[in-house]
Length: 187
Image (cartoon, rainbow, N blue to C red; front, side, top):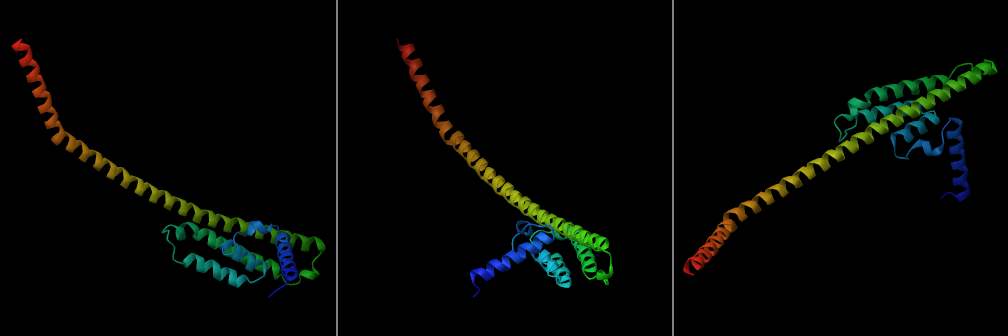
């Protein structure tokens, strides 16, 4: 079991890594999310694992039939960006370049990393939108069912009142009118 100091040291190293890539630790997403895992693998320079994870996510079964169609272009873009980052990080002879060229290469790397972050955030947004639309559709179906049941209840109530009670009311009114007319005629 690690001590609190060791955990704080690891956390501060991780936060420094995020900041070096232009991200705050809160922008990485939840630890089990695709964004967090791909960005972490990219930071750790496990580029092949990141690309494999993207492929697995694309080909995984989803409860939303449109998800794969909607995210396919973003996944492909993410794979291209990860490959671009890989090339920038493993550029041969980087130490022989001038400082300005090295800085330019680092800036391009950060831009690619930000672009990867944006594309992964967009994938999560699409997934979230599909989840919300699915919930809305479910609510709409339940609400429609409830209105149908309520309508059937009121129609049955009206039929019961019109057939059973209406006949009784007409007999009572007819008898009351007969008694009133008989009392007027008898006087």
